[in-house]
Length: 111
Image (tube, rainbow, N blue to C red; front, side, top):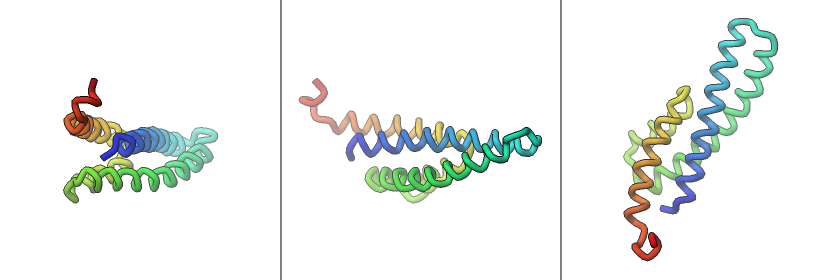
């Protein structure tokens, strides 16, 4: 597996996570009837929706190349729908795969 597969997953995990937190705050603001919250929620919701699809593609690609079991793959895919979960799952996945990538790197390339 190439490091770029992990990198693009990580970027989309952060983007999806930030947008989901903003969307959650927007919904709360909308419930509190704060001026402009409805438009903010609509724009962020659309952005999160489209970028979540990209996140799904990248996460699925990463999971298939890392040969994850179905349960782990589903958890990573669903992490983009739970506020802040994407950050924690990304950190755990990145740490695990960085270790595997470092172990797979030949000694010549490490120097």
